[in-house]
Image (cartoon, rainbow, N blue to C red; front, side, top):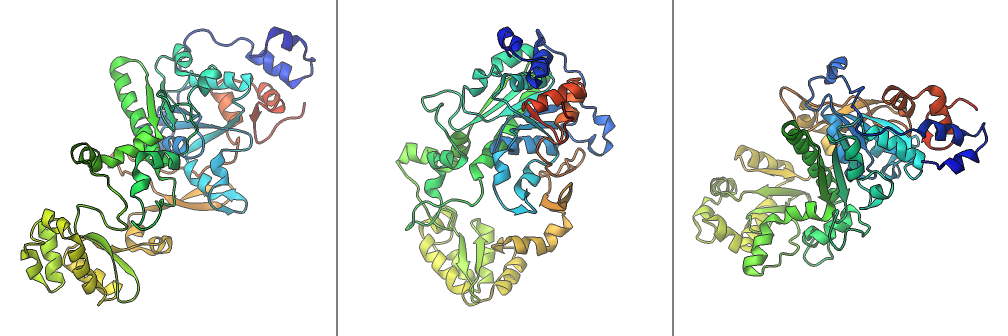
Length: 448
């Protein structure tokens, strides 16, 4: 809030004076969540499980926006706040006609507001919005929201039912809490990065923001759990989702192995350790096929398909643990067989034998695949600039209360005016004053 002295120094025609006057009387005490979204007014999404819930997304880049996207996909009204220059994710990935294709997907189904949270006027807007929301998602460095007066203690005084999802590199406490972090940094700290790649090469990575997605998924799960708990307690709560911890949870098989055996796992290339056979094999036409046949019955089917049913009775390969103890020998036998056949032939043989196997798909393969088409795994969403833009369908698929894609991610500030007007009751003149002062960005602003 502007001080009384700074307010007096402003001229009558200053946009900041109009902003200061509009924010000079902040609400006292808890605010009722009026103007809640009415699921019945949107028949197409009324059956979605999160219809009727409202989410304020203050997160940026990937983990926070992905969490918000999951909630939006299943019907929540998500109000995403970004800076005037746009969320950092708008600079990531490929562009088409100057527009971020990544943002078109990860910002889908959301109302997009642009508010400067580093200014007291913007912080007050966030405070008023949070008072009317069920969930707040943020991924600032711990302590940032508290510095702005937007921490959980402050906001829960206004809205005791608020669920706050806090995503950070290292968590809200502990000696590393103040460190800067990204998903891949948390991934390196988690041990996952040490396992990724070939044993004779430096640690590699998956070419997507994997740990951000893992954490966003956990965060959305936590939000749903907290909303369920709120039905019993009547209170909101805080969810602490740390990037490194969420990635570390995927190290599950190796944690007790180190404690009890001192075993330190390392990179194994395309093979999954202690699961044999489970590897990528070359084919006669210079391609690759991945085969997984760790179970007893499926391995017997693989051996028969290879024309070597006796392998299932060989003492080295007769049980899962024996196969893992002799994985190099077994991989060599399978590779000799696969290199005598073309990829398509191998896929046909193994499909008939009911052995899980596949080529490694490219995106071109995916777009051409009949199964993807039949299940509509790729959907096209309407976009104000791109016409129709392809993106992954909503998962998981719920039989009675499915999610859906309603529209793509829109422009910066697309919904600022509508949300401030409809939800907070701001007049057009008040919103224009905020826009002229640089506190918000709207698509159209009336001149002073």
